[in-house]
Length: 310
Ligand SMILES: [Zn+2]
Image: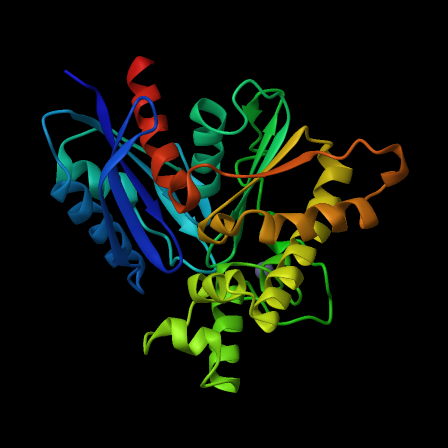
């Protein structure tokens, strides 16, 4: 029998789930909005997991956006996902399966480490662009956790007089570049230019980053400028992380990463221009995740499958 796990990604905007196999393949992807209260978040994870139950599903892995008590299976707090949410207990009762809970970006980093862009790499950073920015730090071939909460790179302050972040600080990295920032840029361009490319491509739906990408690919100058700006802020953060961690590879995941070089080329250029010791020309490679927006779902499932071997 093929071993599979149910992988669940609890993000600020949506909860996504799918059946995940050992090679990192997924099927049956489900997406529902993230509820606004902690008990509802746990209940939603339970019901979505139950809907994916099958004979092959042996365990459930959950990655949630925020600070996570892995041993207790509790999502403690996050600026975009309410807590405390007793996710492991509720999902375990709903499915009868063992449940592994981790931070969503650590789950994504596990996917990159076992089946993705940093297999066999000793030192890497995985950046997840979503509602905010999550980070998974790979040091000496393992996920670095500090005392448990390491990797909250989205809340590095890059502009102390910048926009207020949902965490309460000002000018956090994720207020300058994220999936939400790109969605806002799309909405702004559509409002400013009702006959423009973004408004036309959105076709009456709320304008989002995907429409900004399509408009940029058509050559729309203002959309191209938004991706350029996003890439530059991405590069500013990568430059700081590189000064601290000196990684071989930086993987950029999450929905905006499908923009590829449109986003990553300005990030690479900024890294060269703004990096410490840049003249030594030993910058990390900056690559897009091959999992697009699904790396946390895949990584959560793979972590659950790995736990069965213990
Ligand atoms: Zn913040």
